[in-house]
Length: 315
Ligand code: UDP
Ligand code: MG
Image 1 (cartoon, rainbow, N blue to C red):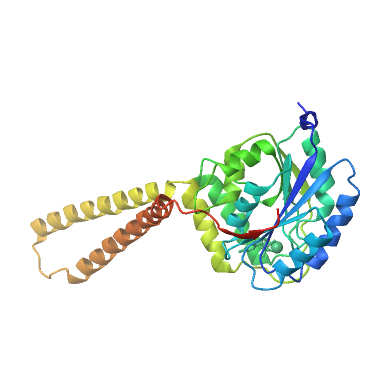
Image 2 (image 1 turned 90 degrees about the vertical axis):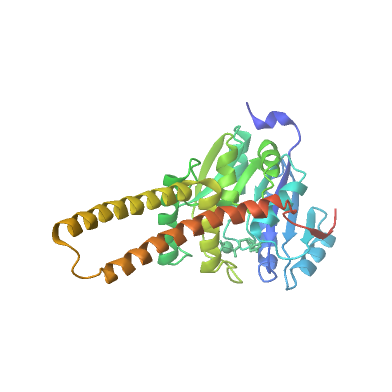
């Protein structure tokens, strides 16, 4: 079945922006140039200002005055890219949406290929990067290791080298909007919802201006979120850890008793006692920490707070 048969050819472009005042004057013309060549479609350009502290919103307001296709939506504070994307997905009006970063790392030149995949009947046409010349060797290596780990641990395969840059059919938008959890791991959601997927390879360029908003601590946090929201393996791991150390301790106890019966107890085993106590309490703390991770997540979710709040919009 072709998506073409759905009639309307309204396509939304969703761009989450956080302090992108440097980037927008470059991004917008680059995007317009590509869209200008796609006369078969009508476009909505939805920018989500994720609580920027620079001139991002002012620039968006100017763009909206000049170009009726430009819609913007400003969140009440910085909620993070994951929340900004949900805000955008809730608001887009097109039959399909293309999510892209404002920093030109998601090249607008790929849009025609994404649309071609959609016309061929695919619901989720995602861009898969082939090289990451813009990223450091350490970032590349850690991301490779992480995705391997995640794939092993969770039932849902999360693809490496695939980001949020993709085209989603209305069916996928509806599905994603139903996932309202507070701690969001959108990359996992894309896999979780299923639907017909197509990969489009591309070369990921370096950020063209401004700087990345992701520090190492953000990446570690996002990584842990990914693990704990899609896998309960850490919980099971803690059970194994507990069993292992308890079993070891039991064997050691038997050995101590046998040794005492055979040879008596000449010196009190103070050092071994202390090391065992330290080891076992360490294991207990690890296990408590793992349980705490999940408990904290549950606590956040049961509060049922909205994922984002909107301060103003122009549509
Ligand atoms: N972004 C956002 N909210 C944030 C952080 C980032 O909306 O809290 C946007 C940012 O403006 C950009 C995209 O998410 O359009 C990707 O951010 P960035 O380029 O900093 O991340 P990287 O490419 O380094 O992963
Ligand atoms: Mg970037």
